[in-house]
Image (cartoon, rainbow, N blue to C red; front, side, top):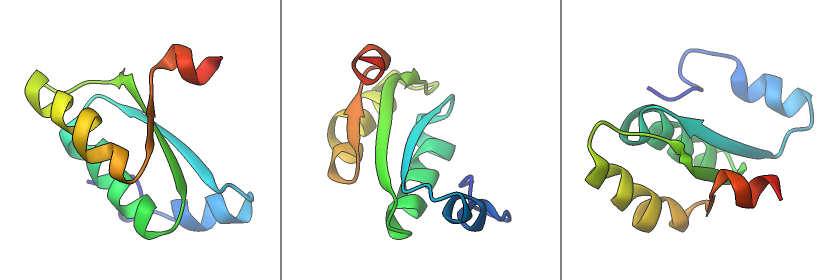
Length: 83
């Protein structure tokens, strides 16, 4: 489920000197979670835009952005990040 799975994304990002990723997505409990975990394991700095993510279960989204993601990423709103 991770954006890194089955791709050269890690190599492409590193070749471009990218060290910090900003994550958004429509499956907070799926692709966003999987990508965050793998990116953290690959030592990328991470930011998750809480209101740039969505899950079909609002409680899953709330727990992930409020309790799980902050352990490995900064969690901001889109407005906070844009400022």
